[in-house]
Length: 89
Image (tube, rainbow, N blue to C red):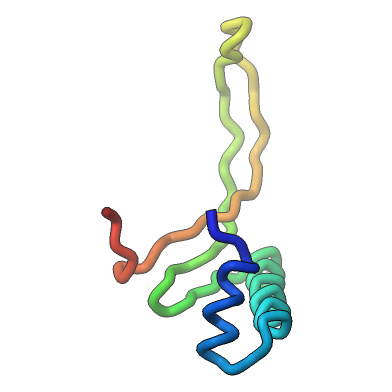
């Protein structure tokens, strides 16, 4: 898995920023994306995809331990729809 530290190295080289500053910019960007999605906005990043929040309706599920049916309330989910530019291998 690649983290922000590993991503910040090439970003720093490409932009001429220090690695610390590149990491700060990446973190600020991610915070803003999450803030907008939490407000109910969809965030489209060209070439990457769309981040949005969707509501999953309440439903009945089966408890795997007991086999009994139970109700699960509705919940909000973060959904990412990838761009057609992302290649699946």
